[in-house]
Image 1 (cartoon, rainbow, N blue to C red):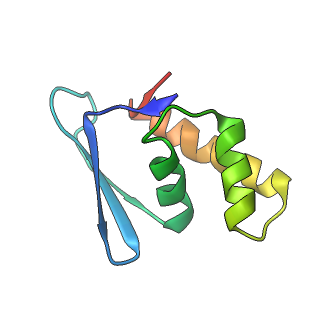
Image 2: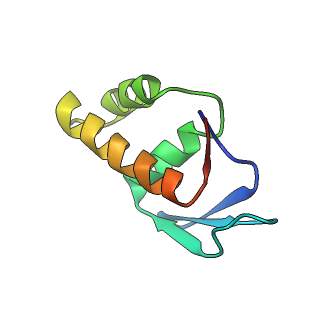
Image 3: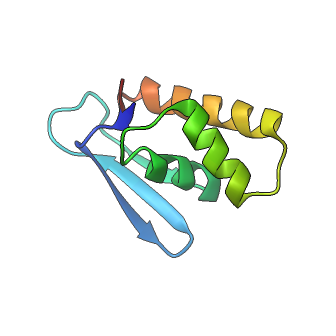
Length: 86
């Protein structure tokens, strides 16, 4: 999976903003916390949920169950707005 190229991100301080460009059905802006921004950054390149979980476990001191659940939630949100290319 990968972030669709019609979704553009910009970091401002510790916050990442993402907006849809072009003819996407989503016409809003997403403000991401650090964890969500990390996941979105991973999606800039073709990846899997398992690879994202692994990278987050390397970066953050948290258990795998929590990371996996958080990744599932963020991916579900991104899918709802049509930001993920499967």
